[in-house]
Amino acid sequence: MTALNRVPSLMARAGTASALTIAAVGGSIVIPGVASDASAATMGTKALQVAASKKGSPYRWGATGPNRFDCSGLTLYSFKKAGKKLPRTAAQQYNKTRHISAGNRRAGDLVFFHSGSSVYHVGIYAGKGKIWHAPKTGDVVKLQKIWTRSVWYGRVS
Image (cartoon, rainbow, N blue to C red; front, side):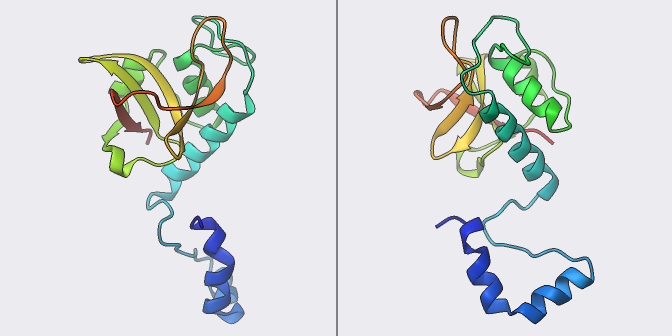
């Protein structure tokens, strides 16, 4: 059960009066396990939704959307729609993110594929070891399992 699926049971335990009181004073409900940085989570979640909405769009080297993408073009486009400007290439995007460990990754973070110290591919982490990405010429934007351990993670803030 995800944290979001637990909201109704948490609300039931907290009671309607408590929820109404929180809403009346303009507060927010804190849910354990959900992002600690709400603005980054919202931006990452929005970018993830944008990328997912481009499922099936053809890959084209150098393309930044809205109908064709290369890998960094998809991430650039998705975050732009979420309200954040990213640089053009995967390596430049890696240099502009806050680097995080695999254990701290969350949906909406960027996944950078590397060989040695060179970043060569990027996608948006979707959870459960999968990313949305534009893989290669002849392919389309799709959800795919991360196929290697040679990845770094970055959070857009």
